[in-house]
Image 1: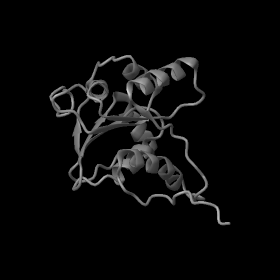
Image 2: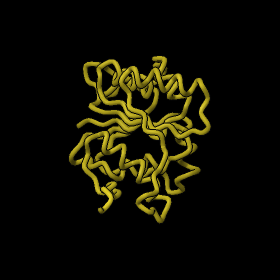
Image 3: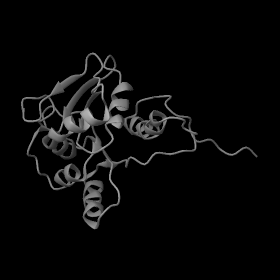
Image 4: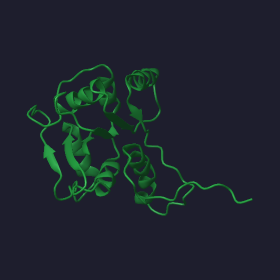
Length: 185
């Protein structure tokens, strides 16, 4: 599977790092693109920087000569993690000013999997309307709302509850968190 991981300037760089940590470039073709502000947020939130696994290809935001910016070569799946509300709104309205936006536009128009992981609270009506537009267009929204039934003991374990859901929607097996089980009778 060809997977594009897009990282924006929303707080939550650890979500992107943990997703990359759990994607195997030997099994999947992994590409990364970061928004301009994502670099600053990563520098603040990940003091050691973003660690790209060997084999992951990173691209500049302004280059349109990438393998996922055309409908003739779309990614099988694109994940925007974390996703700012500005990015979400621009994607919802087809504003393809750079390769990140163009790739999301391509994913939607080619009916490929587009997963957005917004990390914002509270939400305004504009945000909710943009959610609606994206859902109607075929995107999957997985807000960065962690679960706690697994009893996470660290920030990484909390983050992994969201990353596990992203991996589930990509169809990639994982053992990041325990599955919810039926109550014993």
